[in-house]
Amino acid sequence: MRQAVQTVVNAQWALLAARTFSQSASCVMWQGAAREAPKQLGLALARPIANTGPHPCVTPFQWALRRSYANVVPFPLAQTGEGIEECELVQWFVKEGDHVREFDRLCEVQSDKATIEITSRYTGLISKLHHAKGAIVKVGATLVDIQLTAEAQGSGSAEQPNPKQSTPTTPPDTPPSGPASPPPVTAAGPSMPAAAAAAPTAATTASATASAPVSATASATTATSADSGAVLTSPAVRRIAREAGVELSKVSGSGPGGRITREDVERYISQAAASLPHVGGAARAAPPPSPAAVAAAGAAAACAEGQVQAVAGRMALRGFRRAMVKSMTAVATIPHFHYMDDIGVDALTQVRKALAADPSLGGAKLTLLPFVIKAMSVALSQHPLLNSSLAPSGEELLLHPHHHIGVAMATPHGLVVPNIKHVERRSVGEVARELMRLQGAAASNKLSTADITGGTITVSNIGTIGGIYAAPLVNPPEVAIVALGRSRQVPSFTPDGRVVPRTVLAASWGADHRVVDGAALAEFSNTWKALLEEPSKLLMCLR
Image 1 (spheres, rainbow, N blue to C red):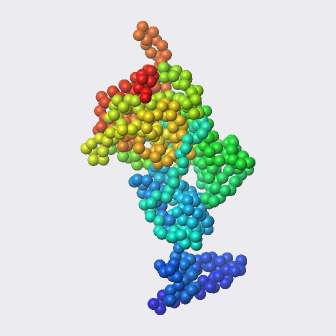
Image 2 (image 1 turned 180 degrees about the horizontal axis):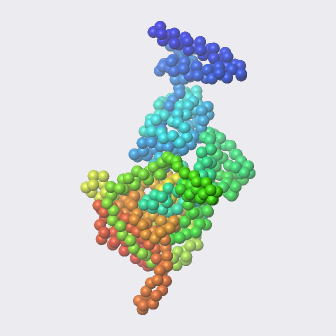
Image 3 (image 1 turned 45 degrees about the horizontal axis):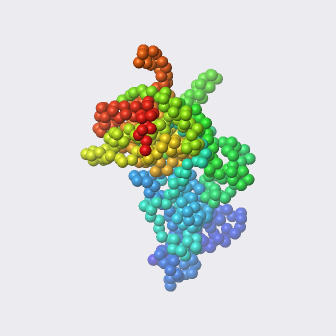
């Protein structure tokens, strides 16, 4: 008891001395002590009675300190999704000493499934950030300490947060209002990890590394100039543009004084994608150079100068790349059956050209891919086995009533497979518009958890990168995937023996052989192929 009293007395003397000396601006060391002494003393004195009034055995000075430091609440990382155990801390929107209110943004985290913004449940001051940008944070671990203000204390907000209560908010996934398409988003397949892992350029990486955390208040209210000093926008919008590879100087601002808003950037991304060349039915954006390509170019330049350099290093697996490691590891246990065929698309190409300017597209560019996806949904209605998944017990099949068709995309952030929900209810135009939205969200790393979960079958348009045939791997727990190769012209014989050119699209199927046998896959592919080769049959199946 005597030792405890002496500890408190010593802490009080340290606090008084530190406060006295800290009044001098030159006493930097004592100013630091002034900040630390109350913290140590508060920890020694904090007790549950801090909010109930002075205790007979506690001096007013001690009670005031208890009152101040007993209301610092830890704010943990909540559960961001089923099965998620940890997240990468992408960036902070606040710094120590900032004042936040309820629902203000605190930070942005990325799980294996999506990028999520975490918002505050309290009003108060940020007293401590527990993790640095880029750190891996376990679910339930403390992200930040918040010292509640008198207003929050009076309203009873001092209850401890429950890590199981989800406080993250997923950015809105409203489709862009204009024609659409993201910078480097290229359709690719799960079987092509090298293409999918296309990384940002060195300049983009350096820019992202150099960016400092900003407070939520500053992000929302402060307009700053762009890199060129002539563009007005907020730090949050700059981050979105930087991640998508967009030069803000090329974006027209619709805000006051020409300020660029988030909607302006998303509209620009959509318009950029709509102007990209399309091969084999999907948008093809030139992928950013991979680290290997950058290293090879540097090595070639060094050799030209008579120098030889060895490039080595390590790159941490984060976000979608980390998820790909897990999913492809799981795929290794699945026995695959592959099936390949060519599909004539001359008639479908004519239909696409005739409908390309239809107002129902809402600005989306019509390619062959929306027809491919819609025809697949019609074929699934006739062959429901391909729209199933194997139950975890391995003793029964789960037949899915809806067609959530995924489209594999290679982005600077890694391979991702968002899916178009309820394709069986959508028109071809609606499929095209939703595909445009997903491409824009993937380019800016803003796909929601709903966008990338719940898929029942996958399309991988690897032909936009190159190649004709592939051996795709299923996307668990789905049982089938198709890889579309590069469309090409081949000589073909007519019934009267003449040789004519014919445009064909290569289709390579992969299926879980535990569920789908060769005959079932071939029959499904033939139904799907017939709908694409004779679009009139597809019209008869539409509701």
